[in-house]
Image 1 (cartoon, rainbow, N blue to C red):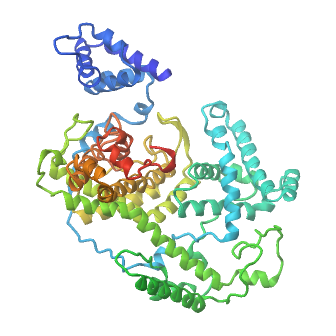
Image 2 (image 1 turned 90 degrees about the vertical axis):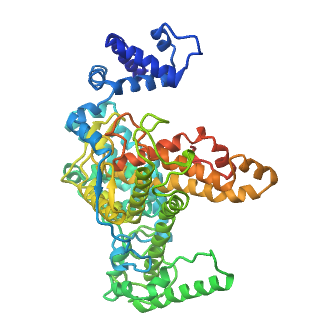
Image 3 (image 1 turned 45 degrees about the horizontal axis):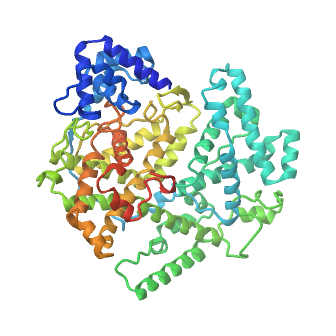
Length: 620
């Protein structure tokens, strides 16, 4: 209601402004909202405007304001429609507009990366260890704790906390932090929880809290589609727990590094040598069934199992002595009885690299290979389909041309077919490179989030209160990735601005969250395209339905043409700072296309191929 009032007030100022703007508003309304019947012109412009619903009104006002920047600025300031104008200078906004059609030439370098050339030594530093059976019990503990927690509601909500003085806010923060830690301990061990509530000695349980929190972070990196709400609360909880004044009161640091393959192998003098063993490639390879008979698949499975056993026996410092113990080796204090062990033998055992741990390291590296294939494959397939169905310079029939024009069908950029072809290719190449380096970026993002030297500020970004924080490590890493892509594709079309730490992408958590969504919307699209031939062959009626679109190939090309045009047309916002051709804006346009999928003429084909949405079970 408040937003509606703001738009109505803005409309009133438009009425009181230049008379020409009212005529322009009516033209927009007649074109996009409610066209008047031929021969019956609308005489009362303002009466027609008052009859518009909220969506049509917002669309019309946005279109009118784009034509007059001075009035847009005044109306937005007077009615407080957004805080964006206070955060972005006019100079920065003007530069964003100029960058939309910027073109950078670079010497073209062939992609020298080869899947056969894997640097396991460097990769192991960023690959988290797969969770053991015992660790999964503590995963359920941290996931459930954060799921029911209302910590961010209390601390980041628009209520009393944001208006408190620093001393009272610290008191509230400590109360919430201690409640979460105490609840976690009570859920794990009722007796230990009772004791903690009495003595408030959180330092004595530091090892338990550090490990449980690390397990949650490690699991999320390995499974980006899980803990979608819990992980954000967990990171914001850790952000606040690392403040010097909070850490002083808790008397311990809640943060420990993510347990990686490299760190685990370091326990033995020979552990790191395994990363240079040629058999490691066989032990971590993913066995794909395409184009292979059963005998060949079985042979590869046996070779992989033999390589794993050989590496585990060769590079362990302690052979497998028993299959199951109470607790897990890396963290002896997480036993079912939660009893600290003073055994010299156990202490020595924890410093040794066991056969089970070597196998766990190998399986973790294998998981990473599967993760890369699953996330990069949709990008690779769409790049392949772009090159297969469309020519770089010749647009062909108008319905299959990739050319876009600002103001037509929602596009906010104007590109020729050749320019749009290159723009799409570069964008998907960038996404592929980001996903290829996702584990490294995730580690850097967590370092930025938990950096004590660059604290966040709770700021109204126009989308509610957000934790805006500098993320220099992530920005530098993205610039390196962008430079790599530019060398591979021979240049760059459009803006190369990386939004991070501003009102578009407030912090590194939002940055990571945006890019782990790429497989979510590309995967269903690729799956639908691949299933169309099977759908056509399923029955005569279905074949006739597909033929109504022109046949399998024509339908596939029509879907691809629409995606390559309007998922990369700069749409998704009414200015070039929030959307357009910048690095972040390309994702915004893609999600904008996804949000309108049900309006596409071919949407029924998506449904018939089993499409349930771009966001899994949670809808479209």
